[in-house]
Image 1 (cartoon, rainbow, N blue to C red):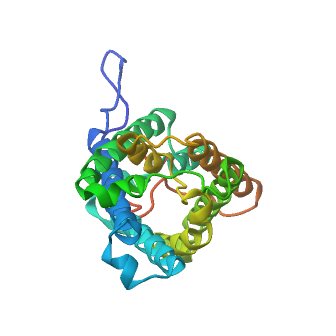
Image 2 (cartoon, rainbow, N blue to C red):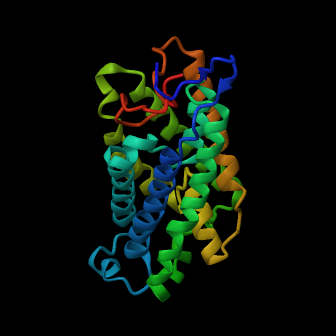
Length: 266
C-alpha cells in the first residue's frame, strides 16, 4: 500500500491523502511545453516568411514533418522526468479516456484537465515572440479549413482523436507493446497531420487548441475542438470496453511503476 493511502487515526477518523501537487505541476509544465514547442514547429514550417517554406515548398511534406515533430515532442515529454511524475496525459481527452476506463479518480481527472488548460495558456504566451510570422498562422491556432467548414472539421477531429486514443490504449493493453507507447506518437501524428490538417488543423487536443485561440483571438469553430475530440475518445473507449482485450493497467504513458501518490493504479 502506498505511504499516501488513507489512514485511520486512533480516534478512527480518516486522514485524507495529500493533494498530489507535484503531479499537477508536472502536467501543467508538460502541457505548456507541448504547446510552446509543438506550435513553434507549426509556425516555423508554415509561417509567412519562414525559410523552411522555401526550403520545402511541398506543403504536404511540411505537414508530414510537422506532425512527426509534434508527436516526437509529446513522446519526449512522456519519457522525461515530467512524464514520470504526471504520466504525461497533456491532453484532456487522454485524461477522459483513462477516467472512463476506470483508471483515474474523478477528482484527479478534474485536476489534470484544469492544469492542462492552464498549461496550454502558459505555453502559448511565449509564441508571441514569433511576431508577424506567428500572427500569419494565428500562432498555430486550429480553425476549420476554408474549403471544408465546421461539419467536415468536426468529423476530422472525431476520426483523428479516435485513432489517437484507440492506438494509445491498444499499446498500453499489450505487454509486448506497452514499453513502446511513446514511439506511437511521431508516426501517428505525421500521418494524421499530413492527411487531415487541411480539414481541421489536426488538434485532437482541446488544450492544444485553447492556448493559441486565446492569444490569437481565433475562435472560429472553437466548439469543434472540444466536441470532436470528446466524441472520438468516447468511441475509442467504448470499443475497448466492449472487446475482450487485456485490462488497462495504469493511467500513464510511460514510467508505469512510478506512483508514489497511488494515483495511477486504482
